[in-house]
Image 1 (cartoon, rainbow, N blue to C red):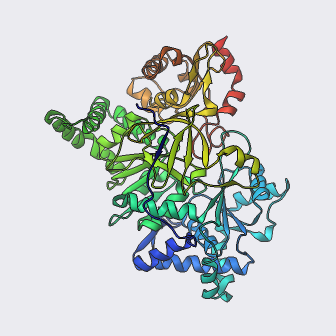
Image 2: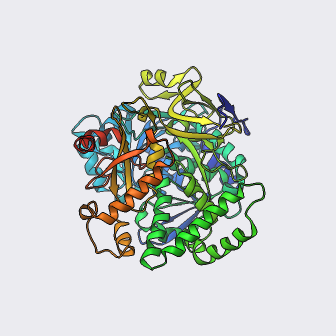
Image 3: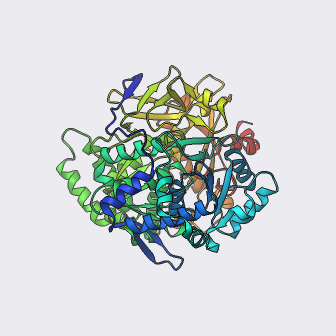
Length: 602
């Protein structure tokens, strides 16, 4: 790879200084008023559709209720709930009222609710249910949280209550509020879920969203604006990735579906039948590993793995000058008939594209899904960049990279390898935190904290987090993500944390996937056992040894994993070791599992 110091992609769409997010919904109503805009499941499990005009009417009615309740332009309004159509309508209504949305993860603790409420100055807070209300009540005992009269509960009919309250507010009042914000006005404050320390509030403007959305539609209309385009949102809307897609779908003409419980995700995919998806790599890993385990339990693992290997080989051959040879094409057709089309059916049967972000997908999975018939477009971005700042495109894809800079965006490599970012979607300020803002910017360039490379064609590869680089006792710099991503590809591995800072060699902490374990045991002719029992089983250990050996092929001997230790439990959002976007909180793991790490090096 030829290392470049800087790469820039020209802007496709310029936006006016007085543009704001409300314009995107207004344009959708003008162009597709009577056509479907959103779909959602009712409490009875039935799917309902709202046209663009119906959605707009709901937004206006709820916005009137917010104004009637005293919400003023610039006020902060919090939402703490699972992804749902109510979340979406309230978000658009907050913008229509000229206010600022502050999302809180549904898993937020009382301490986090109190901190975000106090730091952002939330005036009104809307929560999903009484269970969430209990967290808010606890947070109120800790400090500054909206009083009871300014907290609404979705489950208790707050949306209908807002509509009733707003009957005295005129349409003209909301139309005026919708024009209040300019491109430079703050639209939302998103608190980084954070793998370390107290979360920082990222101020994202209307211009950040509008520029990124309009340029996204111009950059890949074949995905977002194609006839019949549909995208299902199941990731938390508190996360910038899902939040941007929620806006982008409206800008591009896609029908956006909202579901909040991923336990029924496969059923929802079959009912909604999206044409494109977004997910974090762990979801793609789970689909692959689940299909592998199902095949094992049915005695068809050899067929599945042959089909997967064929799909990967076929995809890789697509990148060669001559393309796949005739024999490979024939094998791929057989693999598709026996296995691959069944996996596409599991995902609804119509998915052509998927967008992956949040962590590295890995080259193997990228090729598998393209060979399957689903083009996974891996991208890269942060809360501070309003989601993607680089992305692979259908016509310009390089699997294993996170693509080239978005239109209007630039990437520069600092002397220490850190990625520096600039563009119309890059934020300007951390809320109430000028020190953090100054530390994040090098003049016009935002310091991402990620280490990476740019090749001669402008494709970016992420090699790790700057703060997560391990320096062994021998002085070798090791990027743990490369090893962790590969090792998680094993069906039994749920999570992996590579350690070794200041130590003689690199090691790993591994957690087993309790959902995949029964299928793996049955496929290998072994009796049922618990995770605690499996961690000592010779066959399990032998399989993990082989996985570690395969993982080590990607790095030098000095960077390779020499030992590993299997932990008794998994890392989850509930126990605090995963962020809501499924990233491991490395500092907590290293702190809390110090005894296990010490035992490795004893």
